[in-house]
Image (cartoon, rainbow, N blue to C red; front, side):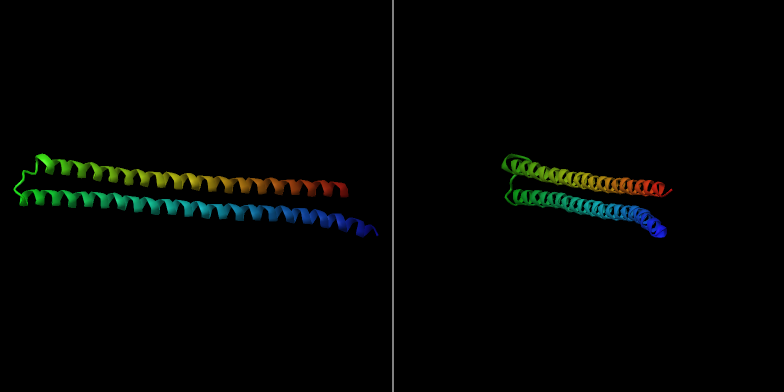
Length: 152
């Protein structure tokens, strides 16, 4: 009968120690999952930034084509390209092209900032999950030590 009285608490101590290991494993898995989400957020942000940079390049190319067309039209109509409506059209095109380029550049920066902010949130959540798992594991070990002390 005395052996049975000892085996039950010993098994309980062993299960608490096993639970501590499992809690740490769960914390590591959660942290790894958050790290994957952080990397995905960064990749998405870089991809969006590239797309916005392409939009900026497209805006400058379109501006170049517009200016070339305005100058060609002015020259074909015997109009002085640096005066009057031709100059006004060029100035408007430069203004719009510059605005589109600046907007695309700003959007690229914002996409990267948002991605790095989101990845930081994920990494922080991963660190918190790991800390929480460690605290739970230490609590389980403490319970096991208490139970072991009761056996003496």
